[in-house]
Amino acid sequence: MRQLRSLSLGIVSSVLLALALPNELFAWGNPALGLVALAPLYVALETTRSYRGSFAVGAVFGGLAHGLSSYWLWFFKGFRFWTLGTTIIAYMLVYGFVGLYLRGALKRGGLARPLVFAMSWAVFEWGKSTGFLGYPWGILAHSWNTVLPAVQIVESTGVYGLSFSLALVSATLAELLCSPPAMLPSPLDTAAERNPLGPLRFSLPARPLGGESRFLALGQLVVSAVLFACILGYGFVALNRPREPRGFVDAVMVQQNVDSWSGSEAENLSVSIGLAREAILESAVKPDIVLFSETTLRRPWNGFKRFYARTPAKDPLAGFIADTGAYLFTGAPEILDYETFAATNSVILINPRGQQVGSYAKIHPVPFAEAIPFWEYDPVRNFIQDVVGLESGWVMGSERVIFELPTKGAGTVRFAAPICFEDAFAYLCREFALEGAEMLVNLTNDAWSKTDSAEIQHFVAARFRTVELRRTLVRSTNGGVSAVVGPDGSILESLPLFESTSRAVRIPVYTGETTPYLSYGDWFIAALACILLALALILYIDGAISRKESV
Image (cartoon, rainbow, N blue to C red; front, side, top):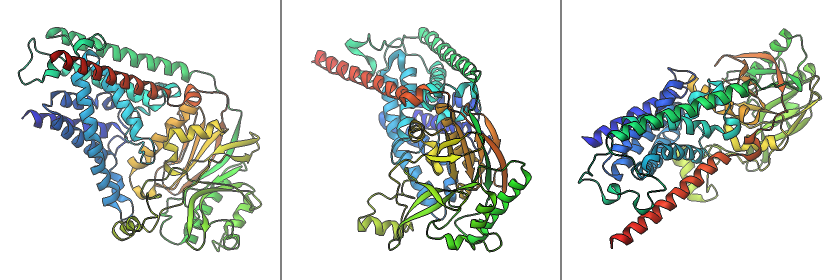
């Protein structure tokens, strides 16, 4: 019965987390649920009788939370079992081990255990969002993306600083709900749990017994609330900091809302050109640049100029570029080997004379969709082709590129262009900014997801980059969210989801601030990881001393 109660609490926590993040009920997420989403998980892990039970709680929580929040992976072409099914299984395994760790932290964390829980959660979120298998979705901080005063803290700590604060509120609230330690240890408790800290209890004082524990838990909740109030105060000050753009870029964002993976290439391209012409005609300002989305072109520009000089037949792309007198920035493949058709998923910049003056190939791939590990080995390749149904992935780019765009209102503007989900990775966007990018331009094709929540979740993940770097972000996408986001996270322009539309926009260019995050990166999460490592070492030494004394 006790284990069933713990599993039920884990399920409740997973549902709360999924509802706190952008979803079909709360399009932009629910900040109130973000404050309490992890509280049931905390109580569930605190009440489990064994580490086996905590593994089960973590696995159920993680698999369900991922499945409910990322259910739109079901719509990825014909690979739904692999995109959603296998990721749920993988997350059940990962979160199972997280459950083991968190139970240990709660059993041996003493009165600091809410703090240890929050630190562990923030470090875990960073870990699951980093590296080749990184998936920076489902981050607790995303539930507060609309509360701009709270979001401003990420200029110092990165997104995980806000996640830590939210997890701490949940943990201290849960601590108040947990049963206080009994005056006498239960016979079911292990020796380690009866005396969890041994001779080094000064480092992590034990929880007080009986009613004193409730009083302490209430005090911890007050402390977490004060911390959160300080974050909001910091945010109001940061929002009121004067910011003046050094100039503006006049652009046309095109959201064609057609499936670029199917249908006629010429017809699809015709839609984009027609929408761009409509926006230019309605605007009194000649654009500096026209923005199409990822995968708008199915073949390279170089080597196929004659094709684009007559395609689409009624309004060829080459003629459109010459007529506008503007640069075109669009997604297009770059073929590296015509014998093997090895190609990169790239974005290219074409000047008004029809010359390609820059290209960037995606560096951080979607794992197993765009880049397949061990593809060079026959058994792996045969399995992926025959069982999964993928023919091959893209060849990944090897270097970051900064584009230069001459403009009327801001001189030469240097921008970077993280492709598709690359704008969700803070490390990559920071590296672009360190190399001189004055703004970020993201071209994305998420239209396959068919859900508002998928589009908004991606946008929300990218939105935090603006505050971390104090740079403007422009997103020109196939189905949404196409938008201009200012350096404080505010949405300056946006297009409606899943509509074929376009708009002429003025993009402010900000370069006057250097944030702590830009200078030092993930220093905050590194500090938390070091603290956790030190605590683990202390507890290990403590356990060794206790065992020696008991002999």
